[in-house]
Image (cartoon, rainbow, N blue to C red; front, top):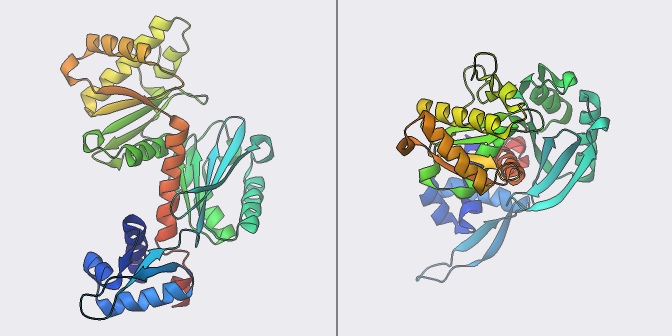
Length: 331
């Protein structure tokens, strides 16, 4: 219950910008004395900032509080083909530091763990870690990531939480990307989405239905490489064909399959892989396989930014949940 209240207070203050005790009590449906108790402790620890007094309506002027965005930091890490990129951000999602490290130095669990420990030593306010990987993940266990054999079938979340005593989330890259796009666009019409990437590790997709990321019964959702398309080829094999028209046909068949199965509002492509001219060709060819009126919006976005936004969202949620709060530990 303590963590639930803390999560509510943090998320509400970060959303509203500032609030009084009475406003928080009304917004969260929690008694005024309980709100006052938690705010007193949060202010004493430096988690809250007093931003002023409201105008008097005849009685005592109410104090107005805001959340201190620098009280906690989050660390987001992205596995890529040749390097590992990291971002350190505050509770408001503002990037404090960003950089890359050669993956040759962190291609196994011990070296990655040591690398993260160095981040924490340099930034002791880090209270959550979000890691994005180009593979299937089952509740923190990497179950399919062929290009990183040392992490295959390894529970990275559990390992890091035991080693670092911090909450960790491990997420598939395309699941994070579709979440980041959704959080940024925030349009109800786009609540069912497919984010498609042809990729350096092979094709993959992030799928969202009615605002929820779809991971599947065995957390293998989005592994579109294996979708059979021709008698002798799956989608990945078809994309290896040299002729542009053959790859275009393979993509259009996949679009038609997504349309017939989940009928999404939009399918998003990485803007470094597809331009407006290619989108028009895909739309025309997709209409060969399925009635045009049922086709989703085909659009592009910045995959790297969406991916990182998704990880920041996941890391921020861990931060404000109360898991790593000094208040939650001391009470």
